[in-house]
Image 1 (cartoon, rainbow, N blue to C red):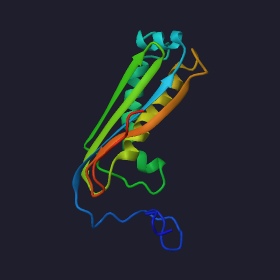
Image 2: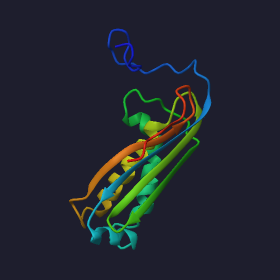
Image 3: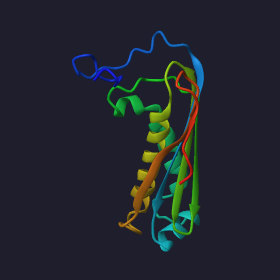
Length: 158
């Protein structure tokens, strides 16, 4: 079990000690999508949802969520994030979210980017559920990460 960094030699959960690691510039990009009816997508795109500007609220929710990832995910380090951007791209069948999170630090920001996307899409659902309760959130995944000892990484197409 010692190959898993969040477990000690006895199998007990632990927060990884990153104190001895060098600070490097790190960035992570994550994405996900919420699919919905054409009617709901048009209402979001045209700003006609009664609860307000869905994309603006979802963007702020995602940014706030990235900053709180360590409060939501056990063993995740609290980080001094230097950048969070969240792109929400509406189309005729839904909204695609892409988050980019960066910092100079001793551990990566993959969880923060994934959390930003997840909460942004949940917020879209919450604000538009009166229009379409059958919306589907899927495809949440890491697209790329840079920095750190484990080298840069990018998802393969598909």
